Length: 313
Image (cartoon, rainbow, N blue to C red; front, side):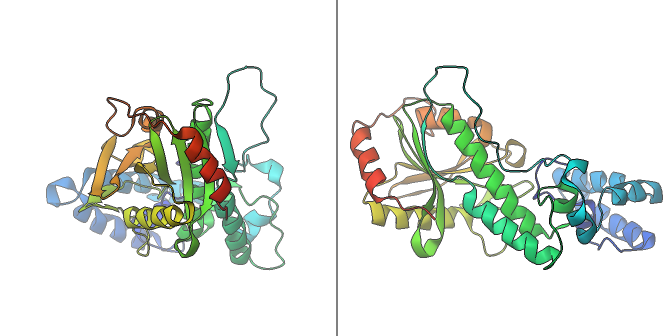
């Protein structure tokens, strides 16, 4: 199993329900093998995903083994929390520190809104009256619909961004789950010597790419336009705070973006960049060009204004 709750299950990759017959599985595999093969117009990534899915459920023995780890939602909801490690549970409270290194200032509740939404959707899906002992049991999460898993994946992505910023030191401040009015929320605002960043942290469970200035990928829902959404959210927050962003960033898991860092287009107030998560510290320290850091002299003034005007969801 892959570490992202948003990644497709083998049945989803093959485009069949978990109740499909073995013959239906084989027919789906053969059809998709032709469609995804790189020599026949497909892509290497799609072909690899298909082969991995087939390895997991392509034979009766492999399928039985996979399905034993994939109980029904009601069965898994009743499973004791001690029977499986809660891989995606909320971060534990911070343990007492053993070092004296100053950390970034953190405001808001990173991932909190999406975790609340995830729990609400999971309870509705499992059914009223069904005990939900461990909503983060990986076996239960894998049986949930993709839209529910995506909400949890985004919460984890937001928490990962905050963990990265925290380690950058006291020169940085981060606000998370910032209210963007009718546009929803802005995942993060990060203030540091290289500028003021509006950041979206997302995980769509698979590869994404920039096409004509917008992120595309099989896991991105039709109603989402990540680049445009981030621009609208940043604009809404800018109106409320009267503080302009120097950069806009969309942070994705390393394995899901072929280019380490790529501009999505340039607007009046700077380009939006899509980047791998591991590159985030460098970008926050030096700016998206990763060369000469452009320092801002009014950090204290901007921080004070944001402290007074930022609202959280």
